[in-house]
Image 1 (cartoon, rainbow, N blue to C red):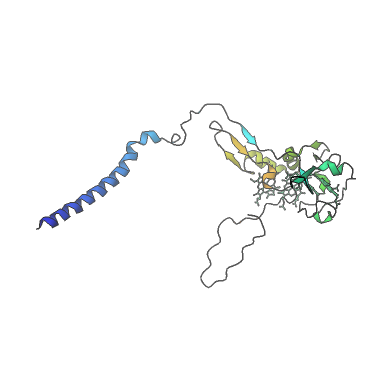
Image 2 (cartoon, protein in one colour):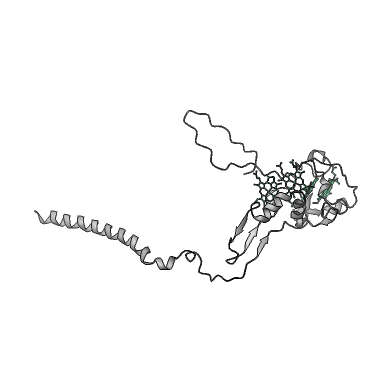
Length: 218
Ligand code: HEC
Ligand code: HEC
Ligand code: HEC
Ligand code: HEC
């Protein structure tokens, strides 16, 4: 046996030994450190007290404004409050579809049962909304508006099974944030847009690719 082939064999077994050591170490190290990664400790070093953090419900933006179509000196759109025009106009209780709007608010995408505009908007003060009992309601409180007609969904929302949430499940660890109805539903066409939950299956070679309906945003 030559010196060269002996050296070659030593190197071969040496490399095998190194690889084996590597695997053993990869298994043994976490096992040796297992005390440090007990469940519930791995991701949070915080001491959990009994105090509960708040559940924050996002509020919609305050009063709605519309683009007047005019530009100011800096070229920015001039936004106006609703009452600017509506204080001097007679309310129209009949309008219940977007197509009926010819003078202003043209092209409003509207599809909400058979509600008229003034089922929700306050004919006595267009800067606010109106509850079923006639009381005025700030735009920022629109969840109350939705809830009076959609009791089951509001109940589900309160139970946490409708409307989603982010933040902490365990309120002792941190706060939780909840959406408001209009984060997901446009009040004027509230139907939730259709979504594609998964990528469509890849077509079999030779098969026609069906067009995906892109008319709904996401
Ligand atoms: C620049 C003037 C102007 C502003 C500002 C304005 N509107 Fe109007 N609005 C109109 C006109 C004009 C009509 C009637 C449109 C038609 O009948 O074709 C109208 C119609 C409406 C209607 C239908 C019922 C009715 O009384 O005619 C509602 C509801 C309404 N507006 C809500 C609002 C809200 C809410 C705002 C603020 C976010 C607002 N408007 C801002 C001019 C305005
Ligand atoms: C179900 C209640 C409801 C009905 C019905 C309704 N609105 Fe609204 N509208 C709202 C709410 C709530 C807002 C505040 C905007 C938001 O939170 O996204 C709003 C905002 C507006 C705005 C300002 C912002 C925007 O979207 O341009 C205008 C203008 C408006 N509505 C006009 C109308 C008109 C015209 C009708 C009837 C064709 C109508 N609304 C019917 C609830 C309603
Ligand atoms: C005055 C009562 C009333 C108010 C206020 C109201 N809705 Fe509705 N909503 C209805 C009616 C009626 C329907 C139609 C039900 C049907 O067709 O079965 C409807 C339908 C819906 C739908 C289902 C749409 C579809 O086509 O599947 C959603 C979502 C919805 N509303 C959300 C809202 C939200 C969000 C608000 C608050 C901005 C709101 N609603 C305020 C009465 C109301
Ligand atoms: C995180 C988004 C989100 C929020 C916030 C939300 N919804 Fe919905 N909502 C949905 C989705 C998604 C659907 C469609 C469910 C389906 O098609 O099965 C829906 C459906 C509805 C419907 C139609 C009936 C039904 O159950 O399918 C109504 C009415 C409704 N929501 C009312 C509300 C009200 C009132 C609020 C506020 C208290 C609210 N939603 C908040 C996402 C949301």
